[in-house]
Every structure is written in structure tokens, then in C-alpha cells.
Length: 317
Image (cartoon, rainbow, N blue to C red; front, side, top):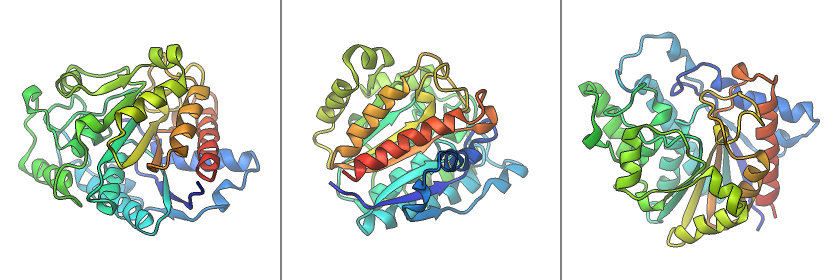
């Protein structure tokens, strides 16, 4: 099945805790050009507005850092994703930090309001915090709670300001009339670094996590089969790939929050290409390459580009 790919480039790192993720998409493009691969000349590019200048201004939203400018990023990602889907194309999203995914999910639901969405979250982290539970205030740890519409008030540790709550609640429901994602339609692969507040939500909602050990034991193909079986009632699927899902000793530490004992790049490639071949998959996103932190020059971006190239080939049959 041949898909018409269009690439969204979101350089925002407003939601990250360390600096440099905004350079990730550019580092991936550099990797392609270094390899003399014309990849980024093959598809329409949609570079989104850059709001990183707000990092140089005082944060006004405690427990959700940079939420005011993040709203602009969220809207830009959502509306561009929606517009690409509405014309029948496939958005391939390259983003700085994982906060981008909240906008992507909103855009998918805006394009398909009546379709049941499945989300496959390939990441070291659960990203299930809210302003009420976050230990850091970094929004890249919150995109799934935003999409689930679940603030996890049973584990509340913070009291966000009225302004923070107003914007947060607006984003939870923006572009949709209901929550964007049901917890039964969320599947983790490789998640291995969570806080107890997130563990509470995972347990309470029985969210599936295919661990690195299970990927290694059963093989990537079997894991994808399990995932797609669970999501068989979903009509559309979004795949979000954080490069920190991979083992930093094998790839590099070129990401904001590396965690040891991750999946291998070969496993990631097989999982991603199999998911790309699934006709239900409507969008794939790559996030959190940070060349400023790369201990092997630009290896993380080169690894990410290799995966992106494989995904594009799979999408085009």
C-alpha cells in the first residue's frame, strides 16, 4: 500500500528539561545529507513556527513549564497534522521533545473525530504525569495524561495555579468533544523508567507494557502481533517513537533522558516497519534526538534517520 508521505518538522524543545532537543530534526537531516541520501528532497516539508525564544523568558506556569507558549506548539502541530490527514496523506513527524505528541494526537482526532484511536508508545518513559503529579514540571512527561484527559488526582502532589489549570484543561479538550484516547487503546513498548504516580495509573487502567525483556524473548514480530491484536477494535493507529527507547550503550547518549537496557536498533527497525505496513497506521512520530548530548558525535541522529528511511520505504510498499 503506497502512502503519500508529508513531513512535519517541529523544532520545539519547550517541553523538555534539558536543552538541545530543538536541534534534533536538523541533526537527522544532517545525517541524511552526510550519507548523500536525498530523503528530505523527496517529500513535502512542513516546518512549524519556532517558539523556543520563550525559553529566554520567565516561566509563568508553575508545575507545567512553558505551558503558555507550548499551547502555540500544540495548536500548530495539531492543525498541520489534521490538514495533512484530511487530504489523504501520511504525516511523518520529526519533533524535538515528546510534548509534540499531545498535539499530534489532537490533530489525528480532529481529522478522524468518530474513529477509535490506538496509540503505540515506544519509549523508556510513561509520560503519564499531569501538572498535579509532576516531579519536574516538564511537559514532555505529560503528553499521554493530556490525551487521556486523566490528571491522576488520586496521586496529587502539586497545586497548579488557576492559569495553569485553565490552559491545561483547554488543551485536554481542544479539537475534540471528548477524551482523545482510551487507556485500553494505549500500548507501551520498552517503558522501564516510571514514577509511582505513573505506576498507579498504569495499574489502575491495566495499561499494557511490552518490556524490553519480552521483546528480546519473544521477538519483535511477535510483540507487534500482540499489540495489533489488542488494538484490533481501533480503526486508526498512531505510533510515537522516542529514541530513548533504545539502549544508549549501543546507540548513544544523544537524548535528554537516556535509560539503560533498552531495545536494540534492529528491534526498533523491525517493530517500526511492521507497524508502518499496517493499513490502520495513520501517523508515525520520532522525537527526543539531542545532538548536544551525543557522546558519539551525531550517532543518535544517524540511527534515527536509518529508522525513518526504513519506515518511509515500508510506507511506500
